[in-house]
Amino acid sequence: MLDFDLSAEIQALRSTFGDIRAVVDVDALTAEIARLSEAAGVPDLWDDPDAAQKVTSALSHRQSELKRINEIQQRLDDLEVLVELANEMDDEESADEARKELADLTAVMGHLEVQTLLDGEYDARPAVVTIRAGAGGVDASDFAEMLLRMYLRWSEQHNYKVTVMDSSYAEEAGIKSATFEVDAPYAFGTLSVEAGTHRLVRMSPFNSAGKRQTSFAAVEVIPLMEEAVEVDIPEADLRVDVFRSSGPGGQSVNTTDSAVRLTHLPTGTVVSMQNEKSQIQNRAAAMRVLQSRLLLLQKEQEAATKKELAGNITASWGDQMRSYVLAPYQMVKDLRTDHEVNNPSAVFDGDLDGFIAAGIRWRKRKIED
Image (cartoon, rainbow, N blue to C red):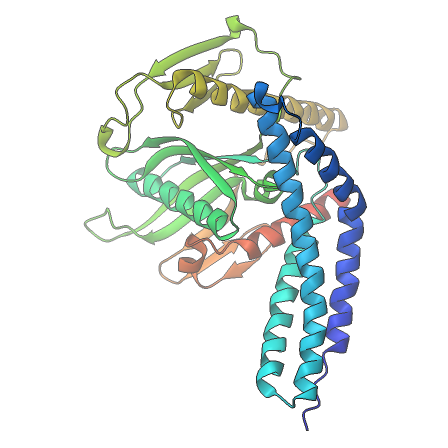
């Protein structure tokens, strides 16, 4: 007779789930969904497309969050029923299924628990990620493209909406830079721990002597604001350049000068956008990113001033935060958290959750210290 018991494990999951529900505040979330649903049902909603987009996007995000919470609740209930069934039917196959579901739920709960640590001012916002090739020549531009693919695959695996907003291709291989938006709840809080300098060590495919090559790429992550009204950009501070969108090898994507490059003259901040078909759309998208970057820069300057007054200034940008080693051994290691794996192929294929979770916990500890 099968004596199968997972009651202690299920009870532990229910306890963790209770903490998560409390942090998420399901009642407040349900009330917010009701308010947004009412706003989305207004007959003249789409008279203002921008406002309508914000309402429907916010509603979709909150509905997805509530759906995920409800699905976990249901899966916990179903798991208990499956354990009872396994014992009643003396069915080892059902017991194996229950063990697998327990492992899956434990992983999902761990991911959600990490999300409860995202309580920063902008953590809930969508993210705009920019990858730039650094030192290392052709290997660096190829590495930058590898990182772009890695983050796109990670986003796809989580069913996050991703839009590549701009790409600048290198002459021989890879990219000089790329900017993309991840539109998902807590995208900025999640991906912000990926910001920094990434380092690749491998036998270079672009070196005829087959020597080991070290190359670098920088990852920047900023929150995308709904309305960056806090940042006023006078026209006199802005230079606008238009050019023809292009892809790899310089082939024309379209036949009009629809791509837009905005330069904020006082800070030298540059934003290019070529994803949309019209110049007007590209300018609007570029302006949102520019405003977001300037707002973040403003916050960083305020924080730096406070540190200076306190006599404690540390410059972290440019510090290597993760190494991807393909030769002479295989390893990816985060130098802040010491989290490491021995399967770089899986990491480059989007398996980043372990690194991101470790990074979020590391950041939380630093804040509390």
